[in-house]
Length: 153
Image 1: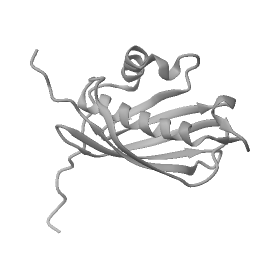
Image 2: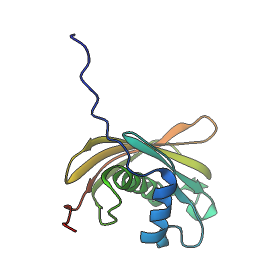
Image 3: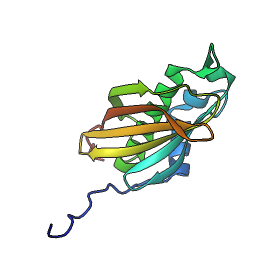
């Protein structure tokens, strides 16, 4: 090896507070009655999002529902695209695949999201969702967001 290549890690253009503020403006129905989904961190090449899962997110058996975890995965991708490609609320999910690993119980569930590729029109990401005192992986997802073309001002 002749040395490592320079890293191509995308740099954020927004921090977690700015993204949470934008989400309240453009997607108020996400946390309409209670603030359950939010960004806790934005860093070069990724973000961390959290679901504070309570009784509203549980299905029978006291398990956090699949749709609640799916939403966390999708919000992770949305936070990544907004914070790294710019605050264009019209970025949309074009694909999301999820695997459920083990039961998630009520409480904080963190989604550690990583940008795999950020281009002009698409962002590919993955997210590992962890919960419980031992921070075990409860679900893993991969997805793609479509980034709208930049419009002249």
